[in-house]
Length: 471
Ligand SMILES: Nc1ncnc2c1ncn2[C@@H]1O[C@H](COP(=O)(O)OP(=O)(O)O)[C@@H](O)[C@H]1O
Ligand SMILES: N[C@@H](CC(=O)OP(=O)(O)O)C(=O)O
Image (cartoon, protein in one colour):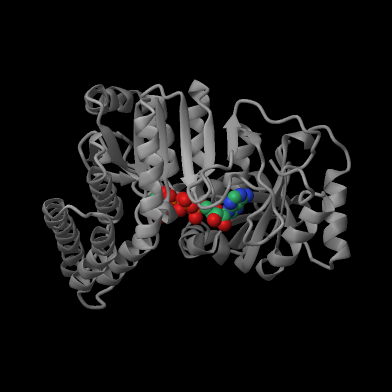
């Protein structure tokens, strides 16, 4: 059996949903069991988050506007793609009910003036709840027995709201119990991506872009032969095509390379997607919804041995370096342990770490959106040390980007770092910091955010990644 995930752009409007429905119809008619996973229509998750935040901050009750926004987006597709009048009336009522439930939650947040991580996860899950009903209805209109399934009934997670982890064995039992009978009856389940629920039933999300992860969790749970991620590019490319137009599609990469690329900013796949699939050796294919004839990229246990040292260049814009500078009265080891314990407790992701031990200073990279939280926690932890001058300063350098050069072939190949830094030098791009002990799969460094548009294409060209090796 196959799990097929369709991202926000693949369900973003009537034209995209028509294409998604064609792909699913063909897959269903092939006779092989298929489970679909859908993301929210593009832009919907962002709107849900913005409305929830606005409601909590007391900027008026935007719940009825949100309800209207959700209905406008989804009913526009119903009008174009659901032709049977009875079905159209029925799906309209269902979508209205879901949008009203969401609006009531946002209204409660407004009344409380508080948005807990738990409430936020519940609210953002409504984008996928609506898109799965919509896609199922379009398929039913084409004679396919599709059934919308809400993933809080299927994927069981811990309670790390906003970035939950699946409890794989419990999910396996639940998925087989819920989805097995549907597949046995030759139904096509359209499962909501992005969220699950704790054992006690609280809705949890798997992190932004987490529908890819949902697909791989279900692949694991259902012993899928393959997981297909349908998106708006031909596959994993040598760089983000928005930054490097001559980027080419990689025919195959390893689970480890894909994880590294995703972790360092290749938005095409969520970094945690590879873990459940790799555990069972299930290949993941990245395919273009709008060009299904292109073979795409295969992510599997092995990589293509095409002799290339560097596979791809990625970037994470919008990061800051936070530096903690000690005076020498505290041992470096002590400061390091306290810094990372404190940051660890905030739950914020640290992308890179560097240390200049002679100056007793320690730097690390976090997303700019997380810096206020991290700085507040550090200032509290080091309050006394700052007062007594044992820690001299804690500060933030904003508007930076992490760039990573990734490829399994650089393991043991000398001169890769030299070529990267020489290229930056030739282009007069200043390097703010270099990661200590980069993994054997990547070399990562920090530059000014505005230099990304020059740095990534320059390194891409220096390694000849745009050459005609197109799959
Ligand atoms: N190395 C890369 N290869 C392919 N796409 C990339 C890469 N890096 C970034 N991207 C971006 O990822 C986008 C697809 O991810 P996303 O927008 O999350 O899709 P979806 O809505 O299908 O989940 C592409 O449009 C592309 O701009
Ligand atoms: N809708 C969620 C989950 C997701 O995976 O979306 P997409 O497949 O469009 O990246 C998000 O925006 O984060």
